[in-house]
Image 1 (cartoon, rainbow, N blue to C red):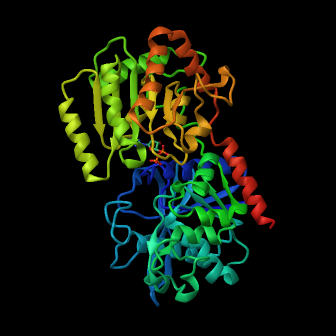
Image 2: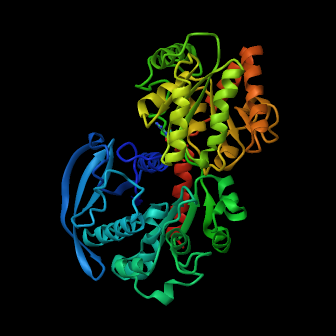
Image 3: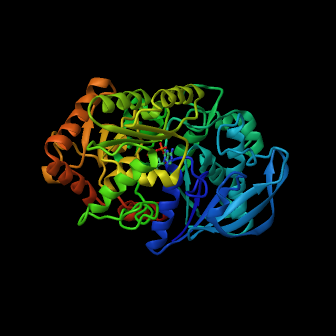
Amino acid sequence: MYIVQIASECAPVIKAGGLGDVVYGLSRELENQGNCVELILPKYDCMRYDHIWGLHDAYRDLWVPWYGGKVHCSVYCGWVHGRLCFFIEPHSEDNFFNRGCYYGCNDDNMRFAFFSKAALEFLLQSNKRPDIIHCHDWQTGLIPVMLFENYKYEMGLQRVCYTIHNFKHQGMGGKETLWATGLNNEPYYFTYDRLQDNFNPFALNFMKGGIVYANAVTTVSPHHAWEARCTEIGSGLGHTLHLHQDKFTGVLNGIDRDFWNPESDRYIPAHYSKENLEGKAETKKALRERLLLRDVDKPIVAYIGRLDAQKGVHLVHHAIYYALNNGAQFVLLGSATEPGINTHFQHEKAFLNENPDVHLELGFNEELSHLIYAGADMIIVPSNYEPCGLTQMIGLKYGTVPVVRAVGGLVNTVFDRDYDQTKPPEKRNGFVFEHSDEPAFESAMERAFKLWYNHPEEFRQLALQGMEYDYSWKDPGAEYLKIYDQIRHK
Ligand code: ADP
């Protein structure tokens, strides 16, 4: 099959979070399973050019219709760790992708509406006719809309799979989006069964457009698919998902098995496997040396992730002091986009600076994240909501026991050692708590600490059981192929 992925991120060249990992990992797996995959991405000024091999201009004269005129674009082509990627660069005064950031501009909706339009024009003008277009999140929600309404006669039979990684950010526009992209017809699109936002009658909702028009819609775990449809976690799109439930499913994300592998990880000083865990102890020592933590007989608890309300930052903050007061060390690697949260953790870092049992690293650091995943004993994921979550899956792969809240993909991947009803004891792999409050979190942490201190052999066994799980892209890749196949033959 010939598949084109269109997205705003692809790790490691453009990565703000899990979306980048997923776009890269899935593409690679689809190729491994015998398909032809290409990616279309924006050409940001701030992306990691050092991860692109052989970048050259592939298509110089792409003219993209925009607001009744045309914007001149160049398309560059290069390989990102083996994946063939096309990067679109518009030459206009808007400077859409030369902002020194991926997201966070006032005109984000227009930036990505333009990208969506340009990606379709690129396919059209360069005569690319993939069997499947797979697009991701609100940034590309208008692609299925435009494909069906404006391009289907010129393009032929492309089917679209649309994957939602986070319902919180849906992409809102107004009538100017319609004029800019050439969709025009305001009364037609501003209707409840098309693009009109379910709560704001004056707004167009890009993500809703994606759901209504795509041939298949997925989100990133089965449990999150249920949550999005049936609870407030769908952020207002529950009813739309309900109406389109026949084409909506949850497919669990995977993690890249070469990139995240303690047997070959180039960022850790000693390799290890479930047959021989010695390297993990050595890595723990190296982590302590790197972060200037004292070398004592204590477990290391880690948090790696964005610091924002979604991730349960109040519990992350609480975890630092709970760990310190209960005989553990704590390591945090995270970056905050909200100034309030950032300031809070900056203060916390200054306050704890002299404490030899804690290290807070504020910022994004891929290499350090590997060392922490491998060197820590436990990893916490106390999210308010978590569509899939990669950190717990990476933790499991590195024999680092997850302590997680029972939401979204965490429900599909972590099974409580003491209370899980779905798995036999030898298949359980972590600690789970239900409510987003301190007592619930502490009860799970307490069980983890007690096991580490009082029954180290059993703790080790739990870590090994986690390492047994295969959360690679193999199964999810096959599942996506099944979905592609179904929509091709409808
Ligand atoms: P989300 O997509 O909501 O940010 P996920 O758990 O799905 O969360 O994916 C997070 C990914 O980003 C993981 O690969 C994690 O290791 C990585 N990550 C998050 N924060 C950082 C950071 N500060 N430094 C390095 N890697 C990070």
